[in-house]
Image 1 (cartoon, rainbow, N blue to C red):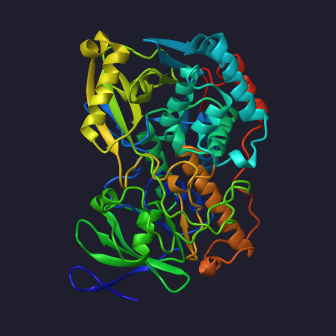
Image 2 (cartoon, rainbow, N blue to C red; image 1 turned 90 degrees about the vertical axis):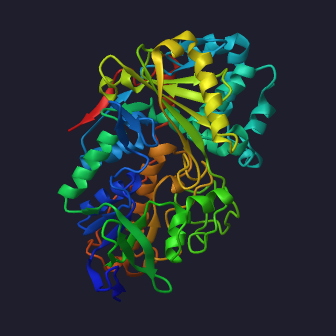
Image 3 (cartoon, rainbow, N blue to C red; image 1 turned 30 degrees about the horizontal axis):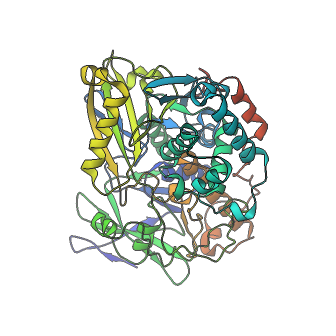
Length: 524
């Protein structure tokens, strides 16, 4: 079906096997995986660069991240690292050399292991910390407590007022890792995520920053034959009653509109924007901010959420959330003349008003900042709609954390708020949808479809794994996939992509020292 282009002519593109909408991390990983299957792939991206929220811009000689903090939550042992090795994409992750450090009572305490938190909590609170750890790792969570907000579950097992540092420990980790307060995330999700954080190992910093990894991914997919079309805006996802058929796109430079045909479409835009494209609509930032948290999804909303007890990616529950809460946050990039965090891990801030945690990625890769300078990145959950107030509270925290050193040696580079269509995790941890939609041939990837227990970019990579397993089922004929089975991909027996995390016994490595130490993973 031809489409009227901007100059008044008709134009139709050649057919492809797969169209990737959005060149974020999820879209680029999906493209790389489909290329390995022998598919003809095109990636369309409305921005002039790839990476989305997983890249960086050079600003005053500093690699300022667009969304991530140059950190991979599970480091060189995680899901993303495994996928990059499988795709043979060059990368290097510097794993953390400590369990963490904690700013508490006006000073920073470094913990090389779980036992090191004894200095943070003291003997009494450490006892309750160990008890909570036992309940999370070795005690079966009762069904009645799975959906309980984690703050209520914690109050059920410890005296919160008598253990303020212990409560702050869980609160700050939740805010930094999940961009959620404890009342906003279920106990089941906190336990799943915590188990994975301990089983996989220490977090890691990307060599060259997340922009360098994005560049390697873009190079890899273009060398394998994918077409990457930048400044190309998706206008509409075309479909009949049950199957997608293509995408109408617009060149943002020339204004020309074309139609690209493919039986398989992978969207890295999130469910709200994808649904809008299915209905020939556009979502604006103003529309989103008028109704925060509201996701009016028709085609996408019919996708059932997985049952808590089911395997990841299973379409088991015929329930649709009427409202999905989104995680929003504020990130500050700071350039310092002196080092303020003496390790490669995360500093959790237990005595701040807003800032939950900070990293100093130049401890791993000094090239992320000019010679002799140090890059620090802080993150906080936004607890109001007053962005200026949130920024002021962040500055107050920074002055409290570093005192005169902040005024003498530090300079704020950027303060970035993530809201609306660019929130921190787009959908709150544990409320995510599955990659499969009711529109055959259309799949979602990205942090809106993270499987339970997988956070940030690890969840993005795992969403791609789940999508690939669903595609395997279509190729094998075990589920109805419409016209996808007619693509160029051979119907061969393929391995399952979603693998279980390492044994919980791996978590015991944290007892004496951080399992990563100075090691990392280097693939060339």
